[in-house]
Amino acid sequence: MIIRGGENIYPREIEEFIHTINGIIDVQVIGIPDEKYGEIIGAFIIKEESSQLTAEDIQDYAVTKIARYKVPKHIFFVEKFPLTASGKIQKFKLKDQAVELIKIENEIQNKYLDIRNLN
Image 1 (cartoon, one colour):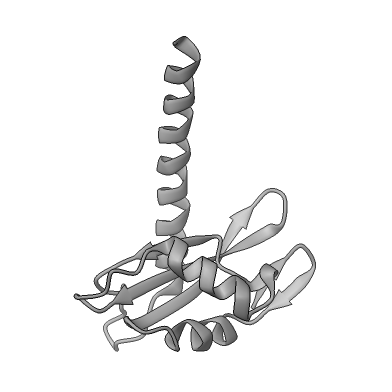
Image 2 (spheres, rainbow, N blue to C red; image 1 turned 120 degrees about the horizontal axis):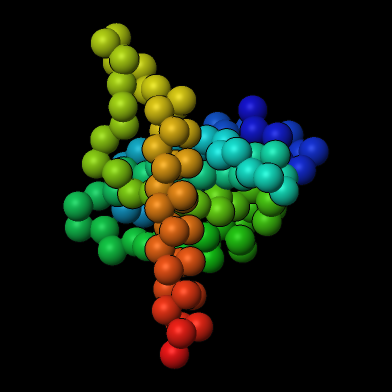
């Protein structure tokens, strides 16, 4: 369960919704630590090779179909999920990857803003 700003959110419900979108092979939804809300929603998605879906496409569609607080803030496209030796998905590794990717994204945005401020 993900607890976002006091709301209990069940990842399975969001995963089942995202599975209904054409071009999606598999999805795993996780809670990502957040200072403001406690956790925010992240989705790791394996999409079909021919799919042109973007994170924005998925978020824009989701906002019209599910509650806004259930829409994943971060969407990551991957080729496979980390698995245990017995084939179970390691969600804790997905969470670690999400934290690292967001950290890198924030660093890039900050550098971009620094460059813009110099001009």
